[in-house]
Length: 136
Image: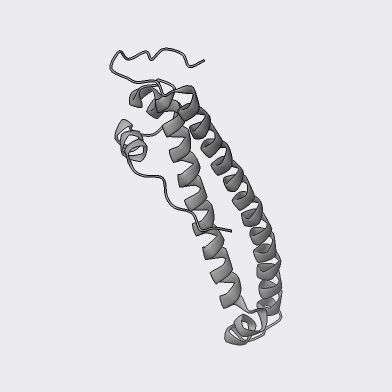
């Protein structure tokens, strides 16, 4: 049962709405966890690649030849992609958490303090439509 809102102007969502918001928050948090795992794996691969590149440079190989041999462009692009992916997942998860907290009756200021962000950011994210995700 939802707790009554602390702010008399705030509306607490119905149990069905809260269940949907909680499901969305849970799903987006799971997506973020998965993106973080992929990021960690990519960082480990980049660590190995950089070690290999450093050793080739230390041995006196030409820098351009080293970049081509190590396929540095592909590694850099993959790392940039995964960082963008985790940022998008973080945004979706944060937005879902803000919407759930607001539906539970928390004020924008309370949510902002809990997350260490501005009240304006919370307000904007609660109002903006949830991003559409690509179907798997």
